[in-house]
Length: 355
Image 1: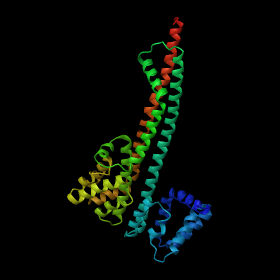
Image 2 (image 1 turned 135 degrees about the horizontal axis):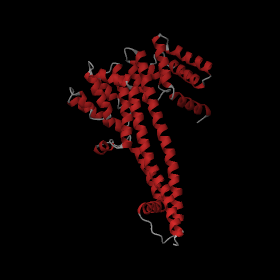
Image 3 (image 1 turned 60 degrees about the horizontal axis):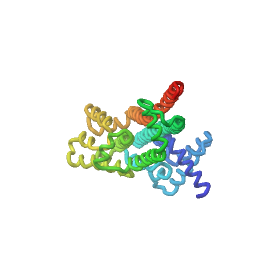
Image 4 (image 1 turned 90 degrees about the horizontal axis):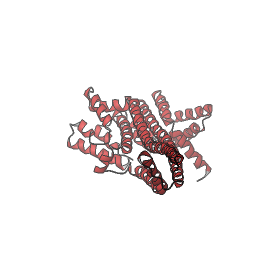
């Protein structure tokens, strides 16, 4: 891998966080009947004015893609610049009757994905940092308690102090096992969250961490589904497109909806209750369907106009999940810290009585 390739991927990573702005600018350009090539030149010129090397790089790569073929389309021009998750959206935009509106919708969808992902990373990052500090406190405190107990090996501890002594002894003797269990659990969740399917997964999706994965995925799916429907796709085709380049979990969930649409085509609320979408999204979708002329209109409204509402709900879920995980480990740290003080007090009192 040479230096130019490294810089290319660096610019693509930078661009991935701002591509929603790019789509919005492209929508405005398309509305004004500016050609894609002229738009690319404008991106380069603006990049020079703003001293933004990533904009310049993206503009040049876009021109190169356009010049490869006179008939190159929107997706083919951008496929090497944007995330693969954007590809189905761009293909849907190409067949839309109103491409500027479709591109604006893509911008909202992508911005939503970026915001949700950033919120997830930020909250979990803070939670992990706090958890590591608490883990360090637990380790140091447990070791300190063990050393304090060595000064009075025959002393009996009961009640709260007895619990603290038991906890401290467990962590001192089994810290490798505890650490291994925690890391193994994290690895299993990360690996199986997008892969595990079946009846067991349906139950796990109600548990805190797995339900968070479901909520984020279902929110992304409703945003994409709204985009497909607003581009003119029929409901069944739009649903099937959700499985393109999807995880095994998403494909499994989409298949349940698709099968329900085949077996009970007139019961759309039932079909969308079969999988993928979180209970909150299903409830809101049902409410919108009551006041919409068509079920598809309810989906479009939910995935286009209520993304901010969905984002806030996910933010609340993320904070609650991360907070719960931190609370659990912080609780142990506080118990041991308080216990250390009460054990020292008991030792002081007993020694002062002539133990």
